[in-house]
Image (cartoon, rainbow, N blue to C red; front, side, top):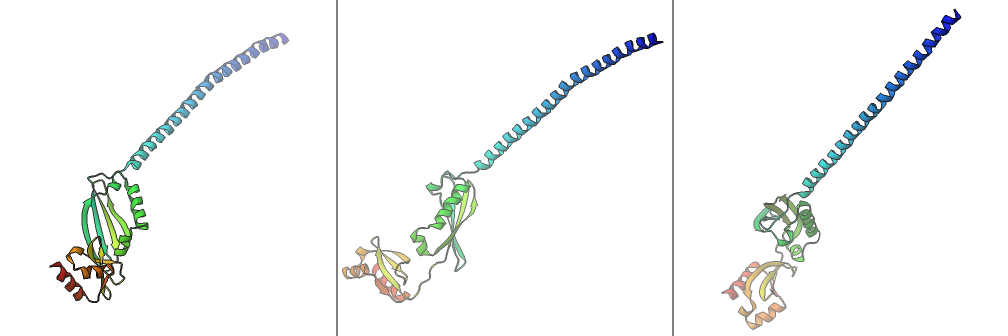
Length: 213
């Protein structure tokens, strides 16, 4: 009986070892496969991220490119009188300083002009400036003015050898005439150098008609 039991153990122990060996071998074979699948999955993720970044860069290029102004771009200027509610529109060639600018650059240039306009614009009653539309074909800019109105009287003066009419503040140009100094008598020329006061609009036009004819 003991002999039979010993024989049974002799066969059972090797069988158990064999089963363990088979299971261990199976696990060793399957783990690299799992790892390979994980690595492949990670590679797919990385590839997807790289693709997304490339697509994002392409999109950024398109957005930042935009339209730029050229010498053929129409420059439409709207001059708005806020007092009367009237608007005068004129079309010009695009100023050379704006050629090659994109939308952001053009808006910044307009903003700087609005912050620090020329003195001549301030004298006209300049208030603000805005871009109404922007494209390579045409830009529309509106300049808003509060035009100064004639007060009590005028002043006649000389600017660049021509007679100009100033408002009663003695600095704002009201009318730029084509009347030159050499068309006037010497006495009038001397008075114009010191400016001539004119009290009424009728008196002003009488003076201009007298020496323009």
